[in-house]
Length: 158
Image (cartoon, rainbow, N blue to C red; front, side, top):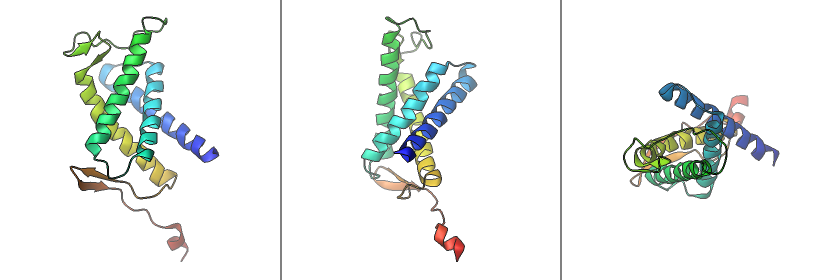
């Protein structure tokens, strides 16, 4: 239980800091509330990744992440109508948007950022928390990437 809490806390903080950093680099500023969304997204993506098979294509995993993040955006965006929170983004000038809250171009961005989040979470799980098996990823049925297998601690003593 303690290990799961620590793992989720580390993943949350990595997602929080990563999202704030990415948004600040591209937009020049961010909001701490968006960091919370980034932290929650990586934790939820990790949970989904724990449930599904390693054999699920990375495209499907990216689509799942894109839908998850878009639903988070939609929920927060709709809350703007009822809560006194800052308007953190406005997609009304982008094509294929819904009330400026969500849009297709950012769904594509979330698709690729989901891959990054999944790889990052798996890297932390495998190398930091020593979860097995060695992560690998399939693209159109073929394994296209596998993490470098870490050395066994027992081998270092011999």
